[in-house]
Length: 337
Picture: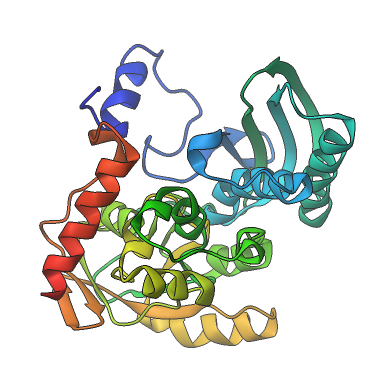
């Protein structure tokens, strides 16, 4: 298996590309790309999904919702609103007309809630489904992953663990008799368009948790030259109960790279009070989880603070998802020992 991580693979493409013109952010430094256009900054993002993302396909409307919601999450993490949306959809041969209709309506419902226009796309047919979503947005004040400082407060926009719960349903059955209820797998990722306005007004930096909380924290820490202290995490209750039923450390819900697409934002201390007032006014309920630190990476687990400076497990470095999972389990069980 290729041992390069995602940034190495992307760099191979970028090194061959023409020089940037009209591109405001450096690559890797923002969830959405920030483009200089007449009338102000434009946000652009593209994201691909297939069965390896562990999205349940039993309910077509839920799948359509999740594909669109996860695509536009990068726009929200950059403090923007979605204007145009397109896709390239490879349809599985076994999907019939009612299924495809429900899938399309799930996508359309997201666009309506965001106030976005469908701009068109491409369609294919194969034995396995694949979906690429494309979104363009606007932001008066684009927010990147850079610009944060030690002591900035860390907030997430919702409970954590949904994405890794969906992955656990496929990867963990062999570990015992515990099961995950089917009702908990009909999860629809929330749209954080209202929270995006808070990000634009108050955040020094922001990233979504699409690759899991720990990976998102690591990216923020690396780009801003900081560490972090995480004091508490708002777990999605079914996800936490699933970990307990399997007898596994709950920290796996933060470590796994199938994230829940919540926004993780850095709020300067002097902005925190106004941030919380505006959140309440907008009907949002962000969770405080800790702060950026001058150095070190610490997470408060079930047995107290654990140091994560040596945590460097990423899925692409392993031959299989199962091997990656076993290494994560071993790491956090040793932390609890």
